[in-house]
Length: 390
Figure 1 (cartoon, rainbow, N blue to C red):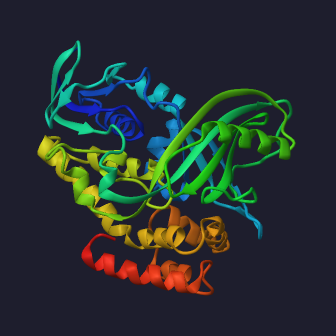
Figure 2: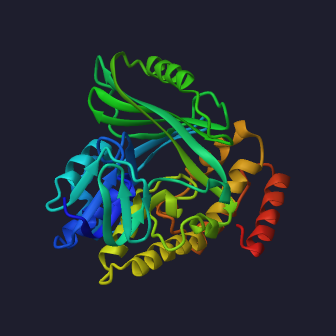
């Protein structure tokens, strides 16, 4: 294997895989190396997004990675049910690995961790040193102590059923289930007439997951829906960060000058923890660079992180409302209230691009949390925002 590259990507998760794929399709002459410690790129995950999260040009280049798409999705709450007419799409780790690994002239080194690295070189045990114009660190989240976080956590099982499930699209939130450990809902993706992914999901104050309990709840949900389970095909789990505040500059303090991507750069939706749209946007920004030096790539990735933080202040305030105002078992009322709003507002929210009138609408009317607690959280948000920590 050659030792000199234009770009080395440390970690083969979603963000770095999308960067590698975008660069190799847009600029196939580049020499790109991806180093992943696991046996394949992407791990064992499903990444979903709304069609309105991306631009038409972004949809065009990511299309080969999309394994499933639906014209709508449903939400269910104790107070109402609704079908949202926004197309919904999913990328699976299996499809990601297949497409990215087959990209022409992309070099992928699997089953290898990185011993040491800097902005222009990496050392791999048993392989020695590789150098590049720039190295991007995309190994997942770090320095979570720098941020004030709550969590969206889940355990999901892909189920093969005895008979067709009858769903025409995803159930993104079924909050009609018992409320436990904060805000609980079940998330369902129908992959085939007799195959679906069912996730037991929580907006919780703590990141710990009781996998055994989650499995029992998934089994009970399937029984309640009348779904006979023939086989559990696979299981995935995750803990996604939900940001309430903190110091974004501290995310970059442990490795000055080293470019970052994905969760490691703080590039995720502050209220859902989803990272695919932001990973797509960063991949586009990097593909447009004429200068792929470490200095240029570092500036681009850090600017993306700073821009993201600046845009997300209102979302962090909403997160404080969700987690700090009212009782945990009543959090579902906040989401129930949200999903009663217009589809355009819902689309803007998930795309992370709320307009001023969207913000006004979200804060108008009777609040879904106690008024005194809401006022307290908003007052504290103003103070922390003035200090730069919001």
